[in-house]
Amino acid sequence: MPETTKETATLQLDWLQQGYTTFAHHGPEALKVERLARAVGKSKSSFYHHFADPEGFQESLLRHHLEKARLIAKKEAACQSLDDLIEVLLEHKTDLLFNRQLRVHRSHPVFERCFEGTTELTVPAILPVWKKIIGLEDQSYLAGLVLQLSLENFYIQLTPDTLNRAWLLDYFVGLQHLVRSFQAQKTNV
Image (cartoon, rainbow, N blue to C red):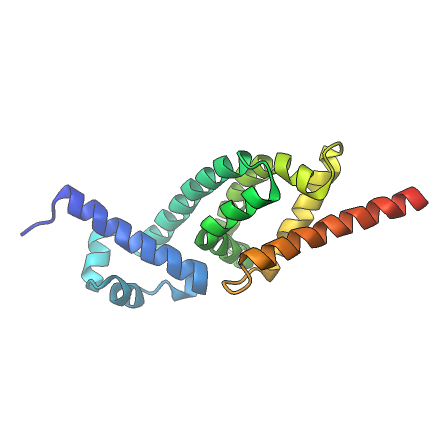
């Protein structure tokens, strides 16, 4: 019996969710059709029924990630405090790990474009609360530079094990301390 439109959409979403999680935790080299089929509990032919080829599947994953980044940016823009931001980051742990894989594998032009796209969405959204968190509310340009530098460092350190409330709090407190030290040095010069 043929699949209904709703069943097709649900199964396609199952493939995307499994691929998204696999990519986030293991990178693009783990996106093997056979491995995904075992995880989804379907045949490889089911994969090819829903996606023309692995490259098309990868493109769907990247579009899915950009949609998730839009949602995260809206939530980040609504943050008023460090606690609010940490809640959003923890809620979107898999999305952050996916973005980390894009950063790690950005030598691949498609991943680089997607990584840049997510950065273009999230950096302006997070900047207002970021300025508050690091104590640079009156210095937008400097706050933006610190954010750009911090993002590189953040993704280098990010793992499924480090992405927890305690690590995030320590990370942000460390940045606050760094900015205060910088400001104190500037005052003493």
